[in-house]
Length: 173
Length: 106
Image (cartoon, rainbow over all chains, first blue to last red; front, side):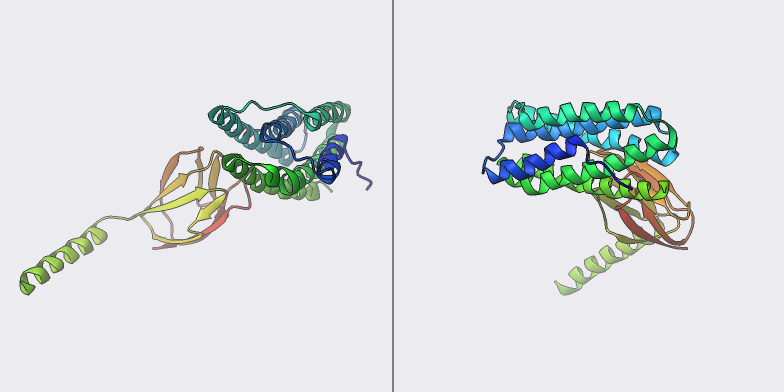
């Protein structure tokens, strides 16, 4: 089956590709903004899935996404407050948000099993892209040790999400 | 001085031994950074398990054979008393990569 690369994933690939090539490292306030935005995107997608999904494993997966990503984002907010850092909007965050909104609209038109498959396939690809960006770009660029450590915890939990999504995807075939 | 010290030590050892045999033990199992430790623990029927969740994520200790299913809220501790013997594999329903084994002697 041909799986379309979602635009949000393309934006993350841009982050890992061109930004790195130019040697322009994102700053901590930008990293915090990107990580938080990536979390919000997944929460929004999951909330849509909770109302639209028909398969119970897909629904349970979406509930896990809301629970975990909200927990990580709350940690991120607490941390930026503690560090007195103001997350800074940037082109990567903007591209992510714009493209995630398009994907949400696209998924919104699907129904039943078609929706379930498309949502889970996107979750696999999205987590893969986020994890790649965390590993190769965001974690190595983070200056603050606590921010780095939070991103590392995030990476670990999102790797679990990716496997979980792959497992759910396999069950839908 | 030797006899006195030895007696004291013996008394302490006996008291210690009594404490162990008279009460069921409490065993702590910690969940931190999405890892259960110890990954292999031993206990007896009647012992209490203290499930300590140090993460900001909710976890569960869910037995594959259905013997127990405990939910531990973020940064909280839950307790359960072991009722049945056996070697029980358990995992977290929310984070299936978290796996461990509890061996419960009769």
